Every structure is written in structure tokens, then in C-alpha cells.
Amino acid sequence: MRKISVLSILVILVSMFQSCSEKVETDLTKTAFIPKPTTVTATGDGYKLTNASLIYVQEGAEGLLGTAEILAERIEQLTGSSVETKTTSSPPSKGVYISLADKEQLNDQGYELKISKNLVSIKGADAAGCFFAAQTLLQTLPVEADNTQTLYIPTGTITDSPEYTYRGAMLDVARHFFNVEEVKQYIDFLAMYKMNVLHLHLTDDQGWRIEIKSWPKLTEIGGQTEVGGGKGGFYTQEQYKELVEYAADRQIMIVPEIDMPGHTNAALASYAELNCDGKARELYTGTEVGFSTFCTDKEVTYQFIDDVIRELAALTPGPYIHIGGDESHVTAHDDYVYFVNKVQDIVAKHGKKIIGWDEIANAKLIDDVTVQFWADVENTTMGVEKGAQVLMSPAARAYLDMQYDSTTHLGLHWAGYIEVDHGYNWDPATLVEGISKDNILGIEAPLWSETVTNIDEVEFMVFPRLPGYAEIGWTAPSERNWDEYKTRLAKHGKRFEALGIDYYKSALVPWEE
Ligand code: NGO
Image 1 (cartoon, helix red, strand yellow):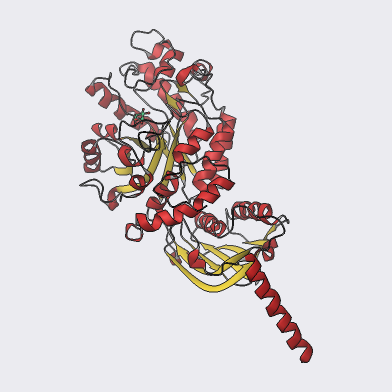
Image 2 (cartoon, protein in one colour):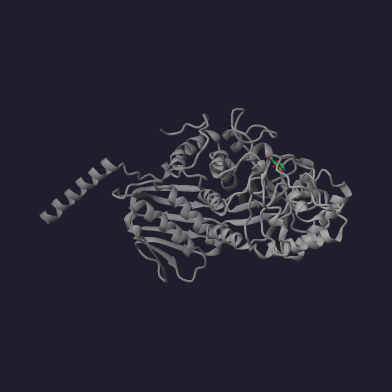
């Protein structure tokens, strides 16, 4: 009896000492989650991370092991001890357990994360929900830790699901080429904030970046330069598959874009027959837009597109192919409509759905087309009238290549300056009259790369705006306001630093020292 009470006193003393020296946070509601979850309730205790040396995955549930492995890798980095992952047929009482909820219990991509003293339970509506829950869990942990520290996760329950199922960012790899490793880093950025689509702008006047085996000169010639005259580059189909898989492991779908009939100089330089006059164009390394077009009344143009889409569709597990369609200033209106109509049929024939920039609304629009609103409200509402869904990428709010202010050393400002608050403070469902939530597939923030040449520059334009776009896509508008958001964002500055991310230290955000 006596012995036990001495022991308990000792335990209390040790734990008091621990909590003084380590400042253990036990209030889950204090974590600066981005995107903000639907509900967070705290139970005031701590789960000791070393208990996580086992991560269990529900036996027979598909697609969860990848999440377990990514979580294990991160915990190993933080604690310095190895973490085992294994499947189990019965829920454990200790460790981390990842499983699927009954379908009716949660919304698509949603999850319930329950942290108790001995068990961290992740229940996802689907594999994506489990992955997003893991990202939430990781935000309760420091980004850096020395291996001697004991880490605690505050206990409580989070239930969560996204406002929009499509939450994306675009990377223009055509104006400046970004290699496989750089694209993987970009994917990691999206994954941290539960974004689930990477749109790759694979072709433009300045470069053709995806190997097409039936038309090899596209990359042999069209892939060999970029804006400013650098050496450009392209992805082999093998490399592209590697990107698709890397993204899929992080619950991200890649939407490939072949921009046409304009923005096609790289293809027109590679194959003379795609030009109406039969003469190959010179490669282009400037930044003007709107001067190139495929020859819309030549049969070879459509044979070419059929081959390109066939090969691309085979590399694309996701449902979408983006056909561009923007700024075809030198294609006559009727030719443009004729062209977009034919291309839609080609994409549909290869089993994919179409996304195009808002100009494509001028064509007939087959079923299941998505119009990506970037500039023209009239085009977009016309698209909706024709039955299309809308992907919201308003240039004046969501273009990651817009400068923050007039002193920003990179970027453009044709659509205005986008400070961090301006990028955050809008609601896709009310921004444009005549376009409501029912019409909206989701939101996407595009990074065009006329001025952005390497991953450090990408980071500077993307951070800290990207977490804001992720939150717009995930969190209900009634739960979002800038004054509260900026205090959460401020706490992510340290994360960016620990990850080596070069970010724009906006004066509007109260960054923590
Ligand atoms: C426009 C244009 C792109 C530019 C970008 C620069 C669209 C859809 N077409 O957006 O070619 O790179 O602006 O901000």
C-alpha cells in the first residue's frame, strides 16, 4: 500500500517536471490546423508518440497502407526510432489504427480522428479521408524535433470533410521546365494541405513537355527550350507515370493539359504539317501570348490530336484531360468552335472528361464538361447555361503568378496584386453572379511560369498563399475569416522554415518569432 503511494507521488512529480520542462500541449483546440476542420473537441490529455511505434491498418481495406507508410516515415524522422506498419483484422487498443468507416457515416473524403491516451484512431470515409486525417494528425506535431524529446499529441476528436471535392493547384512546366524531383516537391506542398489535384500545363508556345511516342519530334524539337532560351526538357512516359504514382500515393490526381488550338508554337515548330502553310515555325522563347494556332481544317491536325490524347489517356488513371482552349487570338471564331467541338469528341472517345479554360464555352459542350473560370464571366455563365460545371480559378484572386504587391521581384500583375488576405478573402460560391455552389466542381490555383524559373521561386510565389486556397476549397465559408485565419497561418511560418521553404513574409501576417 505504502509502496504504491510513494510510487504514485513519484509518478506525479516526474510528470509535473516533464510537463514544466517540455511544455506539453494537451489542448487539441489550440493546434493551428490549416485547413480548419469541421469540428475539434479536446479531452485535455496527451498521447505519447513513442506508443506509435506500431501503425495498424484494417485488413482488407484498400489503399490505406500508403498512408500508414507516409505517417510512419514522418514519425521516424521526428522520433528517431523505427515505426512498424502492419495489417490487422481486429482493432488494437494501443498505437495508431487506420480503418474505413461505414460508408454512410461520413461525407466523401471525410474522416474522424480520435486521439486518446493510448490509441490514435483514424476512420476515413475512403482512402483519401484516411490520408487527409493523417495530414491533420501531422499538424499536431512539431515539424522538427531532436530525437531525445518525448512528443505528445493532444487528445480529443476531430470530424472533418471538405466543402469541395476538387481542390487543386496548377504548375506550368511549359514556360519553364520543372524536373521530376521539383514536381514531386510541389506535390508534397499540395499534400500537406489536403489538396487533391495537380493540373500540369504540359504544352505551350515555349515547350512541349510530355513524350508522345507516335510523334517523337514534339519533345526532340519542341521540348528543347523554354522562356529565356534555357534548355527546357520533357518527361518521358516512364517519368510521367512515376509522377502519377507519386501523386496517387498522396491522394492527388494529375490532370494533364494539352493547350490548343492556340499556345501551340512548340508543336508547330516540331511538325511542319500542323501549320496551314506547311512550314515549321521557329522555336519561341519569349512571353507573348495568342500568336499561334493549329490548322483547324486539316485532317492531319485531328489525327495528331487523336494520337496525343490516346497516349495521354493511357497514362492518366484520373477521369480528366484538360484541352486548354485559351487565348486563341489568331484562330477565326468559327474555326475555333469547329475545332473545340471535334477535340471534345476525341477526348470522349478515349474515355476521358474534358476541362478547358472558359473560352471553350463558345463551343457546343458535350456532357460532363468543366469550364475553368479564369477571366471571362460571360463565357463562364454561358458554359453553365450549356450544362457545364465550373472550376474556379479567378485570375484576380487565385493566380499564384500574380505579384503580392508592386515590390515583388517575381510574377506578373496583369490581373492585379494578390496579397495574402486578398487571395484568401473570397467565396467561390458568391464571387460571380449566376454561379452558385451547385455549379462548382472546385477551386484551383494556377502557377504560370513565365517569370518563375526554379523551385525556390515556385516556393516564394506559392507560400503562403497556397494554404489559403486549400482552406477555401476545404472549409465552409461560414467558418472562415481572415483575422482568425492569419493567426493560424502565422504558426505555419516555422513549418515553412523547417521544411526549407522560401516564403513571402507578408507584413499582414503576425509571424511567430
Ligand atoms: C493567362 C494565359 C496564360 C498566361 C497567364 C499568366 C490563361 C488561362 N492563359 O491565363 O498563358 O501564362 O495568364 O498569368
